[in-house]
Length: 144
Image (cartoon, rainbow, N blue to C red; front, side, top):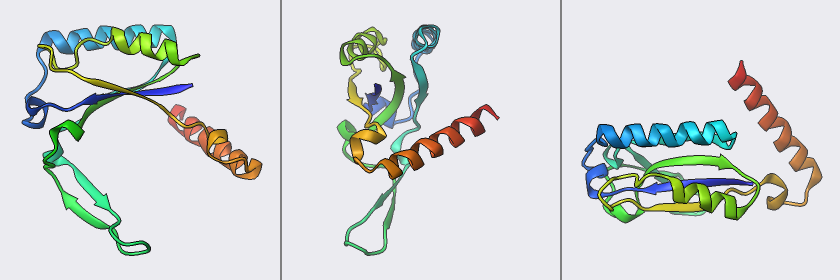
């Protein structure tokens, strides 16, 4: 089971305020712990939405619309993420609860979301095999 821990943005993260050294060190220790446990797949902080781009599809079959950031709803902004692979929902919750406050000072908020596995999206065995092959190719290229 894969889960994404989504770190919600704050006014500070949107203003481009970088985390304190202590928080960076705490997150590094946490990520090292995840890696030692063999559950870490990815973990990154994201730049402010001022550097972001949104692409929307306002009309079915129509041309996508590109909008440059910043975006106004801070509570909807993602400031970072950690992707883990664990055995259960409960294990994912336990790991998420161990994450240091991602913004310090009691401002942090993490949303935990399970990632769909290919077999959950469609019963089509041919599509599932193509998806599995694509994932193997991507993994092989990453290891390079």
